[in-house]
Image (tube, one colour):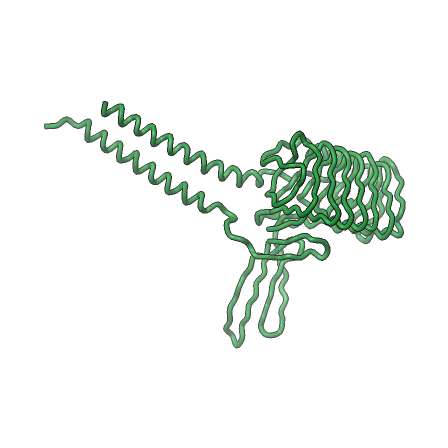
Length: 342
């Protein structure tokens, strides 16, 4: 009886230890899932701010700083008054090759398996890096503010999939925080995309058919349509940030204060040193948070605590130590009980 009781106790302890280990694994698996999402290869399509399949039509003072092109069609109207600023050019001759690369990028994003979690049709709140779609890859919409959290890793990737439409409301905003990069955000749209007036959008739109942008839309990224047309009205494109590290620049100011700050779009490290008469205080802030709310890019804030799940690590350590101690004590009791008594 004593032997069976000891076995039962040891089994119970093993089950508890297994449950604790599973819980800790799930915590880490959720944290690591975003890091496992690899980037979508864009090829030469990344040279274009706007790429159409049939035509690109513009009304008003649309601006962009990367290439504009159409293939297999060739119709581009409204430039001017629209302007393609240097280093961008109107580049139809290379648009066919860019369309081939766009097809590869589109298929890559479309065939990705969701490794994080699905979301509702209306995108809102804060999302970590990962692959997202609504139920049955239904339509996606943004009616307010959608925040994408890079978790202090500039290579965090966000992929949004829909087998129907993408629609953003007027004045809606997609913003990035904690080092998320605009070039690492992808919107795979099987049908058409429609961006509302005065909205701010981030990322690469990879649309199978058409892209329509209403009046005064700001896009930190690209509008790339495979088979259909792109329609623009007084819209503004900025080349997406794509930092893989966090470079800094240093400037000196009167009064012994030196500041070093990374670029606005990519975050960076901010250090201020005040040294009157040889002494002073040095403070450093890792400014990886960049809120994208339209040009210019603003909203730098310091790192927040809790980036790494230290509570889970501490809990796991305590659980493992306690479990090991209980098992060792049970073994000692069994050895004592098995010794012959004199």
